[in-house]
Length: 547
Image (spheres, one colour):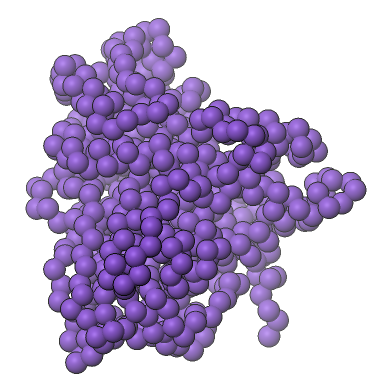
C-alpha cells in the first residue's frame, strides 16, 4: 500500500509500496489517569507533550497513525521566518518565527542546517528596491547571532548563476535553515517519553466526555480493546482534523458538543523530487508567474526538492494527494529559471500535506496566514484547541500552551525548552565546548570518523545527521565487541541499513513498519529499489509475535 501522503502514480516516480502498513510492532498501555491528554502526534502535539512532561506533569499523547504521518512530514522542510509573509504585512508572525530560527538550529544541530537562499531577480515581478527593503526587514526584525546577513549577487560570476538561464544576471541571497521535519517530530516524542510522557501511536481517541473537573476519554489501539483514561485537561492538536475532532469526538456530560469557535482553512501543499539540478549547496527561492514563491532545495544529496503549491481542499485525508496539474505547475515554474528543463517524467517522488491554516478570509490561499491561535475553553475541565501553526514556531506554541494549561490546573511550572537540546543535539561530550551549530556539527562528524574508523564514510555521515550524539546507541553492539566492525551491527537488511539501526528505530522511536523507517524517520526509500524496500518490510514482518 502506498502511504496516504505519497504520490507514485506515473512512469518515473518511486513506487514504494511495501505492504508494510500491516502488522504493528509497537505497543504500550495508557495509564488510567493523567494530568493532560494530548490528541495528535504531529509537531504541535508532540511539542506540547514534551513541554508539559518536562514541567513534571503526567501526560498521555495519542496518535491514530504514525508520528508525523500526515502534515508534519509533508512540509518544505524549512526553518524560516517566511520572507514572503512580509508582503502580506505579517510582521508579528515573521518576527516570532525569526526569533525561533536560531533556537531550533542550536537545539538540534544534527537534524537542522543553515541554508543560504538565492533569489534570481525578475524585475517584472518585484522591483529591486522592494526586495532590498524586504531583506532589510528580514535581517533586522529579530536578532541574528551567527546567521549571515542578506546581500546582492552577480549571477554571472557566482556559482549559483551557472544552472540558471542567461537572462538572470542579478540576484539576492539571504539566510534561513533546513530541518528534517519528520525526525523533528520523532525526537520531540522521544524527549517527551524520556521525561515521563506516555506516547501512544496507532491509538485513536474515539470519544472524550467532559465533566467539571476532568475528561473521560475512550482510546482504541489497533487490534486491542477500548480503554478509558481520565485526564484533568485535554489538548486538541489534531491538525487538519481539529474541527472534525471537536464535532465528532468531544461531548459535555449532558451529551452536547463543546462550543466551537475556531475555524480552519485546509490548503494542500504539494512537492516534487527530481534528480539533482545543481551541484552547489545553496537553495533557490523563485518568483512564480502568479506571484507565488517556489523553492528549489538540495535534497538527500542526489536530488532537488521543489515546492510548494497552495490548493484549497475540503477533506484532509482525500486532499493529501499530488495532482498532475500541480506537478506540471511546479515543473513550469522551475523551467522559467533553469537552463535544463524539468519534465513530469523526471519526478522520482512526490508528496502532499494538508496544512490547517487559520481562516482569515484571504481570497488567495497563498496569502492565508501561517500564524496560530490557541483557543482555551474552561467552561468545564480545560480544553485547549490548536488552530494553525508552522514547524518553525512549534516550540513557542508549545510553551504558550503549557503556560496556560499549568495555570488552569493550578500547577504553575517554569518554561524550559528555550535552552534545551533535543535528543542527539548535545554534541559537547564528543567535541568539547560548543561554538555555533554548523561548526559544531562539522567537528562532530570529524569526531565520529576518528572514534569509529571502521564505519564507512557515507554511513557515518548519515548516522551523524540522523542521530547526533545518540549514534552510540546504534553502535553499542559494535563498541562492545573486540572486532568493532560492521558485522556487529547485525544483518544488512538493505544497503546501508543494518539491524542495529532498525531495532533502535523500533524500540526508541516507535517505528512499526517499513514505511515509518523509509519515508519518515529517514528518506532511505528514495535510494532503494522496490526489492530492497520489500526486504525492510519483510524484516518488520519477522518481528511480529507468532500466533
